[in-house]
Image (cartoon, rainbow, N blue to C red):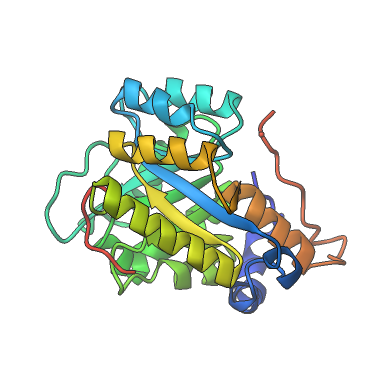
Length: 286
């Protein structure tokens, strides 16, 4: 887990400015970007309802960032297996969407009050073992609410977790509220399989590779569809002219924070993570 400071009240003012500067900096140094590596943070959402597809996902080369739906039949057992294989574990927390699509258990909706949002999120976190971070499942409605996102980000900050905005709406305020709470965070760059065909998935992956080569790294979200898993199995095991370098979002954010603060004061020491024995789009299944 990420422990940035023992006094959460100190974080908002300093880290609002700090994270604004940090997130505007190049994601990977020019030296790292000059080689032939393609740096990707790949998140696979919607794990927990299907054991067979979940196990196929776990078998992919890693580290991957596997996002588990809370209170689903196989989330706990698959998360334990994924942790043992060295993948990074995330909570895929259901949030209200504009399409009235079913959210499943653990949903956070706009008719809740602050205490209900906080308790629902905590229950979801506790339902998935080894959680290091959270991203939103759907959420095109809730992520536009500053009030709701403030509660989410402050709760995650207190729990020592990071957040990845799946960016299911261009009007999301999740990243702004994460920065205000002093929370390590990332934003999705590419949806790999918004269209579930091999051709479309390949085009999206090529976009991610191009972005990663130009910027240093790309954040990619996919799902445990058979087509996606087949594509990733082939691509990650036989990367061709580019060497795909996969990153844990958890470790990547820690490395950026640690390198960005070379001499933290003794009072506000950045503590090491407890590693395990370690484009806007409408809602669909995200």
